[in-house]
View 1 (tube, rainbow, N blue to C red):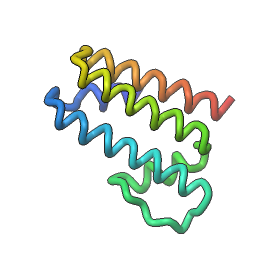
View 2: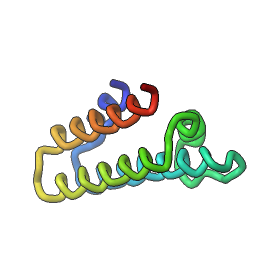
View 3: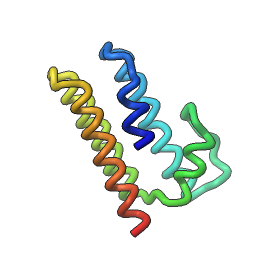
View 4: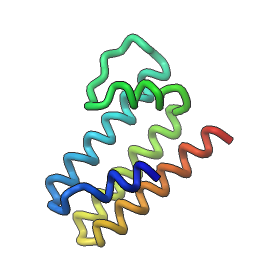
Length: 102
């Protein structure tokens, strides 16, 4: 739920959305790498979050989330409703993370 709220607070300009999606992608990348090597230096803007996420994320789920982020960006770039695309992204990411727990 928190992810959905934060994604919907992004300013609606495409460049702002692209920046936030890129930062999210880096956090996911950091989490996947940290799940294999805790000593790696993060490249993203939220090392604490990627550290916590690294405890549950797998390479497979990281790849799925990366692909979802790219899919959302392509949809937004193709004039799909921004709020709808970001809500869908949030829901799909949540499903993937939930699968890691159950």
